[in-house]
Length: 189
Image 1 (cartoon, rainbow, N blue to C red):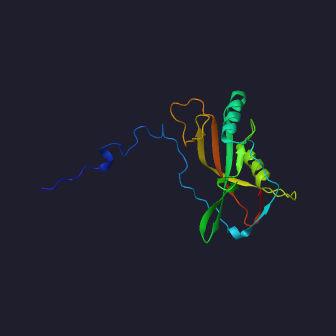
Image 2 (image 1 turned 30 degrees about the horizontal axis):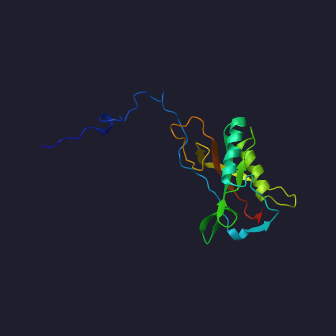
Image 3 (image 1 turned 135 degrees about the vertical axis):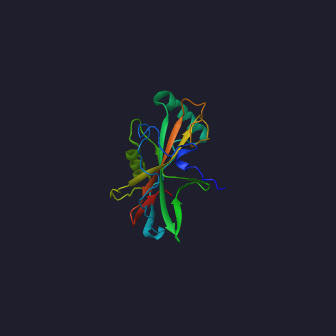
């Protein structure tokens, strides 16, 4: 005797037929990105130097003290950083700024109160990596690729807001910056 398997769309959960129609389902774009991010060879860029930029704070403790004082006045600190990607020997490389001999960071910084994130990142990129000859560089900010939250006035940051935190102290956003095919990058020694 043979057993005929039941029609899969009529048994089990979730059912094959949506019992509520499209009433509660939001139509969204697919999660896959169907566009190309161009990576150009590192050799397409020339690197120059300009006057050094100094950190606002002399130590980590001073940075958190300033953060505490600003939090009382303006609330949560908003920070943006740019991720610039090139390739060398067909392997992707992220460009970082070197501070001292052992510390590396992404270009970016703190936003002014009420400043738009993309416009603020463009301003900071121009301050940090912009040319000295007055030629304005058109920074192409593509996507937000990361969010980090600082729950306290301490170094740890998380890619989420911990459940017990109601007022995070800092929100850092990372943006992908599309570089021109060729160009000059000027940074502090």
